[in-house]
Image: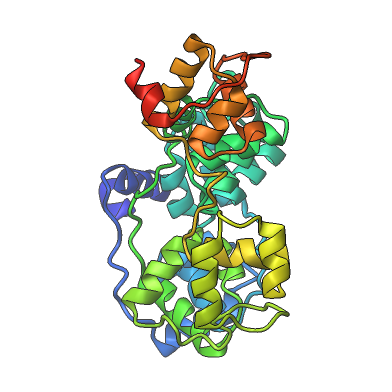
Length: 347
C-alpha cells in the first residue's frame, strides 16, 4: 500500500489511524507465520516483523505471547517505535492512536516519553510530566475521574476540578469508551489466560486494556466463571453467599473495623470484596447535587459543619475537607438540629 501511494509506511499507518480505519485482523495465523515469528522475534524490531507479515505491532506482540516467545515484561523499545512516539507527540496525535499504532499501553508511552524528554503538543501548560503520567496510569487502571482527582491531590499534586481534569486528559487523546476493537490475537490471549488460570494483570498491562475491558470481553466470550482462580490469589477463605449478603447489608452502616472483626476478615479483605461487588461506603460516596446545594445553604445560614454532617449522614472530617476544597471555611458555629430537607427548603 505504501509503495502504491508513494508514501512512507508510517505515514500510511498514521493516516489510517486518523481516519478511524484498521487493517483486517481476522486473517488467521498460519504455520509459516508462526515459524517466521518464532525465528525472528526478539532478534529484530517488532515493527519490521509486523511489516513483513502484514500485521499490526499489537497483533505480533499478542501472537508472541500465545507462542510463549516473550515474558510478562514488555520488550525493549525499537528505534522505529521511538520515532513514532517522538513524531506523534510533536504533532499532537491522540495517545490512543499512538498506543494502537505502536502496540503499547498508555503507561508505557508516558514512561518512554519521560525517558526521551519529550512533551505532547497538547500537554496542559500547568501540568507536570509526572502528574500527566500518574493521571494516565490511574485512568488506565479503571478509576473514576472523581477518584483520580482525589488520589492526585493526596499524592501532593495540585487540586484539580473534575471538569478541568476531564478536559485536560481528553485533550491528550485519552477517553473512556474510545472503542478500540478486540483482535482475534487478543481474544486468543484472553482465552489462554482463562484456560491456564494465569494472572490477568500482566495481560491487561500488555494489551493496554482496563480491567473492566477484560471483564466485559470475557463475558462476551463466555469465559466468566471459568478461570481456575476465580477469586484471585487471596490467602483467606472464599466468600460465601451468606457473608456477601451480610456485607451488602452492613457495609457503610457498621464501622468497617468492627464489621471485619465480627466476620473474621481483615479491613482490606472487606473493602476489596465490597469494591468487587460494586458497593459504595456511605462516608466516601460521591456528593450529589442536593448535598452540594445543602453545603452552600448551610454556609450561608450559619449551620455548623458537625450538624451538617449529621444531616447528610457523613463524617464531619471528610465533609470539612470537601467544604474547604470548595472554598467554604465554616469555623466555629453554634450547634442546632437540621435535616437535609429543611436545608433545601430554606433556599
